[in-house]
Length: 70
Image 1 (cartoon, helix red, strand yellow):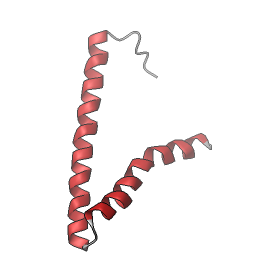
Image 2: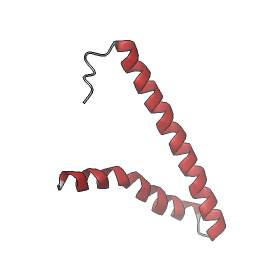
Image 3: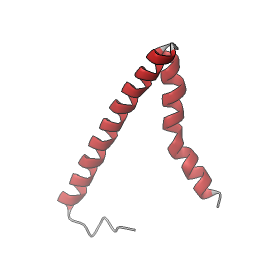
């Protein structure tokens, strides 16, 4: 595990900025993909967003629960 207290503040800030950009980019990409899936399948964009984006955003919690159970 990385000891972030030993890393300079500028590096920690840079890591947070990079992580924020990655999350923003991934969220934008996922939204576009869900819109494309909704258009191709003919289901509503709201329903597709509710179903698919809800499922995708629940994956980290699922991974945490599975990891914690072992």
